[in-house]
Length: 449
Image 1 (cartoon, rainbow, N blue to C red):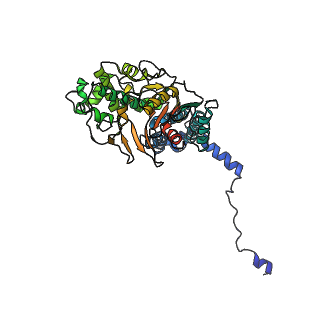
Image 2 (cartoon, one colour):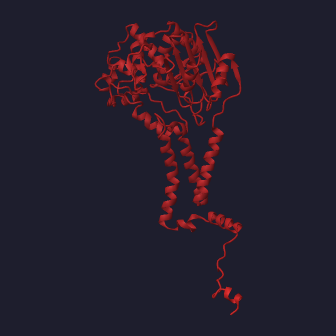
Image 3 (cartoon, rainbow, N blue to C red):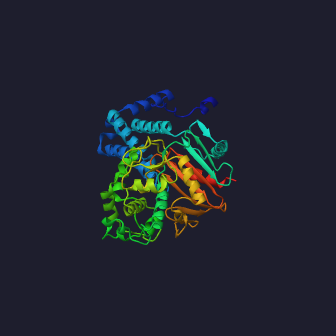
């Protein structure tokens, strides 16, 4: 045997009968498999069909759960519309294609594109005082204007030569916007004024003024407990929450209860946690309706005659009966109906402007507003640095400032009014996007010299 023969293997290595296809063919094969209907592949049996159903239902459900798991009140009203859109796209695409992977990819792409298109962008038009605009530019540099579209701002300084300065981006001092829960703070002023007039007592049970609550546990709650959020009332009535579950994702108004429905929901309150601070829009609505009943006026007329007209707030009103605004947008850009209310009006139904709110802030700083006692803290809240008066929050900041304030938010708008009473200064922010205007407002108030 030669040396060359010794180097040869005893048995020839077999050639592969299944050579690896080139990349191009592998890609074509993958595409072919994706184009095969599920019923012709893995979904022929029950196990495959169950898998398809689990994916198609599981994705929207997971999106809803993620939405509910947000901050204090969840993000459900803000972005749960995406889950509905995903469900609709998944159902429609799968019925048309019967291909799971194609369906999921279509759903993800559709939601991503629609979210990108709807995402709020800051308006370009600017107007008003140069100093205020400079403050807004500074905040924009810090990222505080991300997620805004149109914003109107008022800065009040009673010690300055020009006490009120107004500016806006995409809005001005006359732009009417919903102010949401800032309505509660206004209601608190009128309640304190009614006490001074001798029309109500803060230690009286609310059934004293709303006899329809007599005989219920909820009727024993005092006016003081209602204005300090210590009544034990839930944030909203049960009927309101049921309506919100399907209306909020569609951008529709869900605070439409009439008096009969609100009375029923109120009488069903169990007062769990009574004596402890727990924010309640239902409680504020009942308090406002009670003082209106004591004054023998509708709530809208009460606010107009006792607060808006005396302060010259000609563009401020209670949004009942019909809409006063065209509607704003959620933080994710979903168009939202105006919040036209009935029985819940004292909790969030006011509309106003930066100019009108500057008039209110001026009167609160110089002590000429009705119901000034509402601003005096009486009760602890769930925050260690904060106390509450008649709906007004009084907080001590790390800057050393003591700030009296209230924010607000509807489905499509947000607001903030903060008072630094010791320095005779105030800041008002209005937004046509339902993000938290308190963040921007507190920054403007905290960083003013």
